Every structure is written in C-alpha cells, then in structure tokens.
Amino acid sequence: MKNETLELAKALIARKSVTPADEGCQQLLIDRLAPLGFKPEVMAHGDVTNLWIRHGTARPLVVLAGHTDVVPSGPVEKWHSDPFAPTIREGKLYGRGAADMKTAIAAFVTAAERFVRDHPAHPGSVALLITSDEEGPAVDGTVRVVEELKRRGETIDYCIVGEPSSSQVFGDTIKNGRRGTLTGKLAVEGIQGHVAYPHRAKNPVHLAAPAIAELVATEWDKGNAHFPPTTFQVSNIHAGTGAQNIIPGQVRIDFNFRFSTESTPEGLQARVKQILDRHGLDYGLEWILGGKPFLTKRGRLVDTLTSVVKQVSGVTPEINCTGGTSDGRFIIDICPQVVEFGPVNRSIHKVNEAVALEEIEPLAEVYRRSLEGLLL
Image (cartoon, rainbow, N blue to C red; front, side):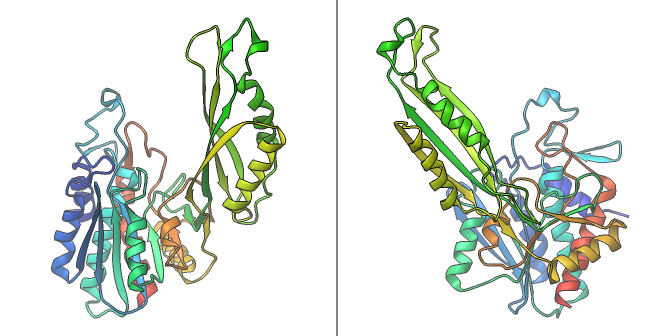
C-alpha cells in the first residue's frame, strides 16, 4: 500500500528550500488541498512565502502550523547521501528537513485530506498556516500572517505546531509553551593604546569583566511549575585588532536571556542597566526581543492531544516547555491554546537528519484524530 504521507514528505525534502526560500513546497500543498475545497491565500513579504489555506468559515477554527524552510545542509561531504535527495535506509527517511519539519507538513496535509473526506460537512474550520521564514530572522513569516488575521478581526481557537517535540521515542513529549528570548548587544568603550603603556589607555575588556561576572552570577527568577529559571548566557565577545601589542578601544559582547513567565523583557532590561551603571561603564546597548514566553494550560487542546497521542503511540506524553523558540510565540497573540507536537528531534539541524519510517503514518493519524476530537 502506498504511504501518501511518506511520498509527500519525500517530494518536499527534494525541494531545496533553504530559508527563506520555499522552492514550490507550498504550491504542492495547494495542489493537494484546493480540490477538496480549501481556500488558499499566498502572503508574500520580501523573499518570504506564507500560505494561509482554510476549509470552512465557522468557529471553532483549528490550525496546523509549520514551516517549509530548512537550515543549510552544512558540509555535504559529511552526509551519507545527498541532503536534498530523500533517501530511505535502515528504516529511516534521510534528508534535510526530514524531522524539522517537512514530515510534519506532509502529515498535516494527509490528515486534513482524510478528515475532510470523512467529514465533508464538518462543523468549524480547519486551516494550515505555513511559512518559509521560521529558520531565519522570522520577521516576514508567521508574524505577518498573524498581523493580517488580526487586522481582519480573525482569531484561532486551537493551534498545533508541527515542531519535532518528541525526545526519545515518538509521542513522549508535547510542548505546551516556550521560554521567551531576549538578546542584548553590548558595546563597552575604552581607550586604545600600546600594551607597554597601559596607563595611557583604558582596557574595555578589563572594565567590562566584573559587570559580566555579576550578570552571570545574578538569579533572575526562580522559574515556576512550568518553566525553569531564567538563564543568562554570553554568546559572543569581540575586541581588538588582531595585533598582540594593542589594548583594544572597544569590546562588543552579545548575550541572551531565555526567560520564563516569571520575568518580563522590560524587567530584565532594567536590571541589566542597573548592573552596568553600577560598574560605571561607558557603554551602548541594543536589545532584540526574539519572542515572549507563552504557556497553554491544561484544557481542551492539551487534553485532546494527550489522549490521541496515547491512543496512537501507546506512550503517555510528558507536557513541558523545554527547548528553544518556535512560531507559537507569534500565534499565541490571536490563539489562546497553542501546543507543539511532532516527530523525534534527535537529528534536527544535524548532518544526516532523519525521521523513522514507523513515525510517519502515526504522526498523520495523531493530527487527523486531533481534528476529530476538537471539531466533532
């Protein structure tokens, strides 16, 4: 028997949609769903292609959300097969995007097809929200679609994001929230000079070091039942000209907060400023808010998906908020209940990315049954 989800996943992987390119992936989805009565809208912004495709006009509205863009393959010579030539071996489907997240996109489509065929007059609506700007800056992707839906006064009742949430085995994890991300770009000024005459210079690395040490040692919050404590990490430091005998005139330090719902971006920014000012630094600081934390408490969506995952996989999923960010941080703005569920994430962004063949049809079945549980 032909595995429709597998075949569609292979067709998507074969398209080299390195962010922000879509390379025709979304047209494949339109070609499959439009004949069943789904109404597509393509929302292009710059180099980014977004697809909003909906079946029905009534509430409640259930959305399956994801991205067709992938990260670069990395060194091709280290792959055991061409990253953009879907290959089956050892019970797995290999290719860039196999786990993150073209298999989930394929499962969305076959689940939606089967649901609509079985229930052509279903109550409520089903929609897919697909972007090609999740792995990149994420400024022209899902956030733009959300802005447009908000402008129209449209809201979403339930959303399943197809990110690879499973940790060790398929079905072991559902993510019901994510931490926020806040990046700081700090430039501390000094006076450049010769290392043999330090009294004629001011080394900004030395000046900044005690402040950075205090930032590292600070407890920002204690977290809560859903989130671990907020963390501070330095990601990049650059100073100097490359010469060994010059005291630098400036040091640039990039750092990031992954923050829980116990902290706010404004509160973190204020506390950082207090520490830097206390150390008397001459500095400039630029902030980039990558996304606020979001949390979906137990309710119909979490309970429905938990029950379905257990039925299909035989595994009782853990509900947690671990990991990085996802486009759920944008969708939560117009949807009170957002969760993430997808295949095992062990190989994402790595060489030889793969998804187990035995996960592919069960994933589509989880999405199909979830649509039934939420709409029927």
